[in-house]
Length: 459
View 1 (cartoon, rainbow, N blue to C red):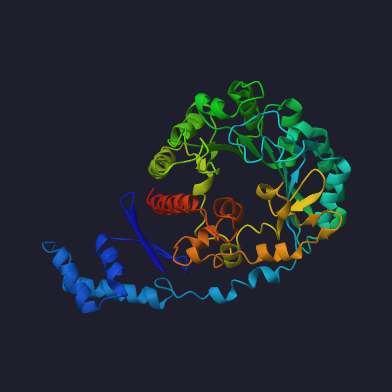
View 2: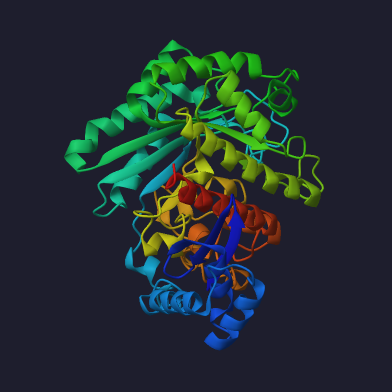
């Protein structure tokens, strides 16, 4: 499958199955579009007619262009057949039941009452709770025991708000560090926080022990404070921004993300990104579209989606300009490594939710990921008895870029690996469904990210 598009002044041709990307002139762009369904003679005649009056477009030049296209096809870089489909179902089987990452829900409670919170204000549709040290310790042992020969293990301290159980977080990190050498493992920790409880002690510990810190901020004060409020209805912007700035400064401006959510209120989300960069000094940025029921006031409308796609183009152009000026910013969704990116296993199999990656509740229950927590039908087992709902694990194991019929004709399937199972479930009722609005926005982000790579080669 070949995907062609024009963006930022570039004519881009993507060969889906080889991953090859070609930036071509307009004549080659048109020739590629005709190549598979027309004879060389018909293509030559059509393009001589279209470009009549251009002295550089001759029959001889077109013959050479078509020969170059044929060479790319023969080299497996254009119109490449799909050789991965027969292997798709076997990739996850090869990894056995190895678990490489856990999302530890150390706090099913929160000090904010965000309007769009998928986790029901941190309670996950259940009771408020804090994870005990004993439960967390067992979760880390479970991860070690089920990690096979993997050396690097990932743990995300999540909530709710994990700083509401900070002493347990610190104790769990200390325990993990105490057994790393003996067990032949290396833990990489991430902290996700709304920032309300950040203080000097948190900053010192996080910058010493956390490989990454995710800081929740939605952008402009009026946007952030409209959704991210406390239980008295007060916005949190003025409380958290100075703390985020202190943490990032002490961290050297590295290994963090400012993570926001845009909703129907701000489909023009680039204004929020540029506010965070220009006014607040943050350079590592992520803004995610809200995922909620269609009737929710926060939900993006079809009209919003068109605005968002335009915003992605605006963002790409602005990021290129800033990079040229020597003041770059990073946008999480535009991070794309075309030379040393994910292996074919990851491109087909995806995030590994329910198999390689699981979420742990304060009580020690296991779920496929944080977005399924609290929905009993998705419970896999617990950290003491392991995965007992093996049929559910196999259902998640079968999720890949080929599991959804809607993905068969999508050029971006090896970039999203079939998409998010949780978003698919909440949008369609099945983890093998698709979240159509999310797919639409993902494809646009990939087009922008690829265009930026082409443009960066010219900088």
